[in-house]
Amino acid sequence: MNSAPRRSFLATAAAAASAALLAGCDRLSRTEWFPKVLGAAEPVNEAIAKLVARSGLAQEFAEGDRSPTFRSNGTREPDSDQYRAWSANGFADYALAVGGMVEAPRAYSLAELRMLPARTQITRHDCVEGWSAIAKWKGARLAGLLDAVRPRTGARYVVLYCADPMADDGTDLYYESIDLLDAYHPQTILAYDMNDAPLPVANGAPIRLRVERQLGYKHAKYVTGIELVADFAHIAGGKGGYWEDRGYQWWAGI
Image (cartoon, rainbow, N blue to C red; front, side, top):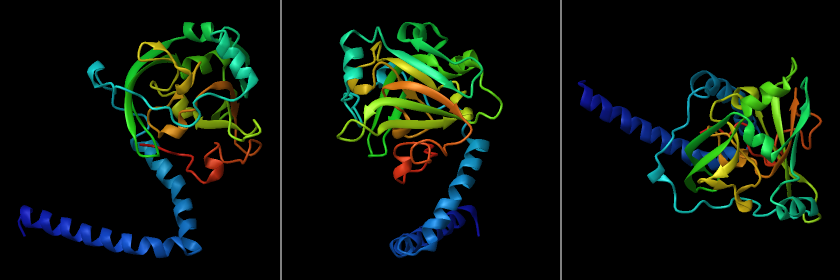
């Protein structure tokens, strides 16, 4: 069999196999064992991603590629007195508390965050809802902040606490987490500027996480605190994020 017919045969076989799998997906999803298999596969997928993808850079774009608008996903403005007070005075009184398993816990004002080693990048935001947009971001490299507070041995994850309450009574604040591999990635920043202007409130002011190798729900907005931890057992639902506690995958790589 020469190369062209071989490619055609393989493509046909792959399409047939995919069709068979899709036809059975609905039935499989109703079994008890198949969701468990999918859940067990996530650590394997994450391990493979660590080996072949996560150290690489996400695609960056040119100025002319920027989208005309960038949607506000999730909360548009946190409904809390503390956040409204910060916003009213241009976040002059805002402070980012950094602690947990670190040698030198401290708090950073927005002005101090702007003095840390920074990175500017034009990247695409991919939302789990199905939309994408390209924007220019500038912010403090999370790696530089972590170097300053000196993580302790045993710290594995960076948990980001946010100002936006997810419940009508003002509780259940949003939170997210990444591991140290992503935290030290050169494109992982705490963004304070978007498209050459201070980050708008609707997009997460005064700072939001940009972790460019993952889907949009990992890009926590309105970040007010950072905690380094060994695991998530003592945090909310124990899954490492607001949506993860509700069934989303913790590793949301793209």
